[in-house]
Amino acid sequence: MKTVQFREAIAEAMSEEMRLDESVYLMGEEVAEYNGAYKASKGMLDEFGDKRVIDTPISELGFSGIGVGSTMTGNRPIIEFMTFNFALVGIDQIINNASKIRIMSGGQFSCPIVFRGPTGSAGQLGATHSQAFESWFANCPGLKVIVPSNPYDAKGLLKSAIRDNDPVIFMESEQMYGDKGEIPEGEYIIPIGVADIKKTGKDVTIVSFGKIIKEVYKASEILEKDNIDCEIIDLRTIRPMDYETIFDSVKKTNRLVILEESWPFGNISTEITYQVQSHIFDYLDAPIEKINTADTPAPYSPTLLSEWLPKADDVVKAVKKVLYI
Image 1 (cartoon, rainbow, N blue to C red):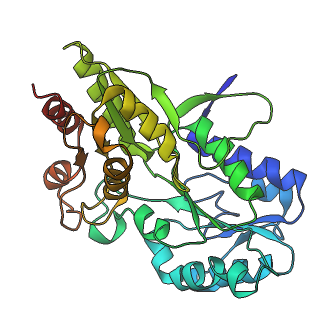
Image 2: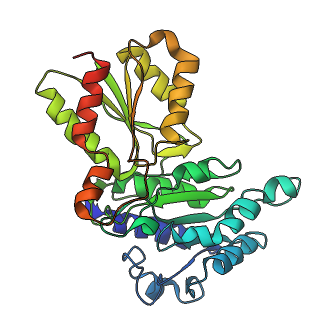
């Protein structure tokens, strides 16, 4: 095993796949000469050249469309958005073309493309640069949505995403690129659609994903002091979702708390809540608790932003609520 930063795990995954398959290329803003806005493509221009690591103008609709079109000529593009907030400019290509090419062509064309970049809040970036779009893209049939929380998962899942024959939304975080973690020296992949139990426990199931899961780990340590044993599930993949892992855990603990960095209306935690109560209602010993951001645009003020985002204390309170203590 070796220790790498999240950004290095991303670069390794892309580079390994580009060495294996000449149809894979990377395109986006500042991915080449600048080594990536967050240095997640460092050294790739030197190795692969400007035909496969391509800088673009600030034109997300344009280069997203080029990427989608190139899949129809046998390529497997990786399209990097400096932030998924900017993906809104190119969302027509993602929703109306990438996700629908297979069905609209009667299966004659697939669309093996990865759209990747950071999602969610990242400090004082204001209301238009702090949005989480996982549920937006997961709402669209034909797209797969992945949100890893650590370098190991990021590399293994990105390699799987690049090899997938359908469009994949791969969402990262500006605040995780410097995170360090161990990954194997050799090649490995992680299958899409498989959640991971990060910690086993018997008292309550806590489901989360992406960078906000760090608050779950903090909460779990606090709760251990009160002899409360949490089982922590990292979804990793949002669509297709691994419901069975959640169901099996809740059947054991009989209680469920969901933490998601998202507005509370119509999000991933709402979907999980429905699926659990619909399929295994009789196993629940308490109502499901879901924790989200405040139902407002993200504030700029650091004091207000701290109140807007869910924290470990919120998880602790929710766990104690479902345990009736």
